[in-house]
Image (cartoon, rainbow, N blue to C red; front, side, top):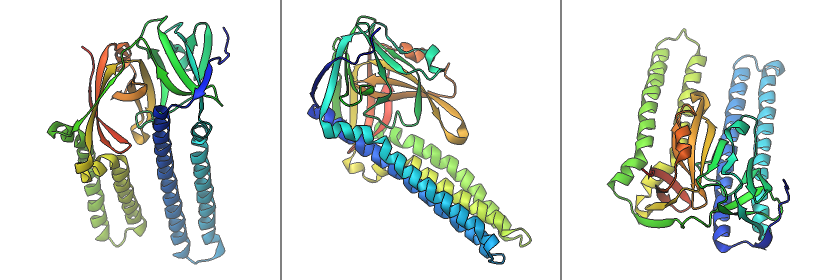
Length: 346
């Protein structure tokens, strides 16, 4: 099989340019959030190390941890800033060049990333008319793809189906758009938010707020108890206070989109995307102390949409066989989309 990119070169369409510009803003905002988080952690760690040193004697050996922590924090901030810029380099290059390459053909197999290759970090491959096109990166991204590693990708069409790929002119392995001409186009409907939409939007933030309230209440109770025990080291109270601050920061950052929409609810619209499923993806995501989480995503209208999550991959494998029309409902505020619900074909 040939691995030549082939295809024809053409100008970047206005619709795709708009999508990529929105994705660039999303990637930059995500990188900025990480950068601010790392900077705050570095400052907090440096301040804590300085407090530990100054509360004793104040000599050079006791201040040494502060300098080491400050240097380590500075290195972490620089590395995060460099990664933020590197992550958007390919996307910025596409927008600057304004040129893309279009690849058209028929699928040799609907298995784009077979499960047997996922464990070996296999790349996604579109085999069109005997030519292999390997995919390393994909734009535009979304909240659905954030932090995910593809384990299996399968087209929801049969072999020999027509497919159209748009890739970067400067990097043939950077996928920008996927279209299946044999499938009918998706329909987009924008309507005002109703009571069910608002209930779906705030369900997860309210659940997170309830769980955080129990944990935060336990921390406050611990601080009150420690305040009445003067013999206990103040370090315990400091760590409890730091944990409470981290909990509040996590609650604000993780559920910020929903809270922001609630505060600006007069400007929020409901958006429904309805159309045929193009591809299905099983992805693995790391959820911090909660361990590994698996996600099932569907490509609709060229974009990935998060449908389900589960603690095990086996619970989602059946979803890879979904075919037909699907409806996905979002709350929309500017470029921000928050999934409300979806309805799969029966």
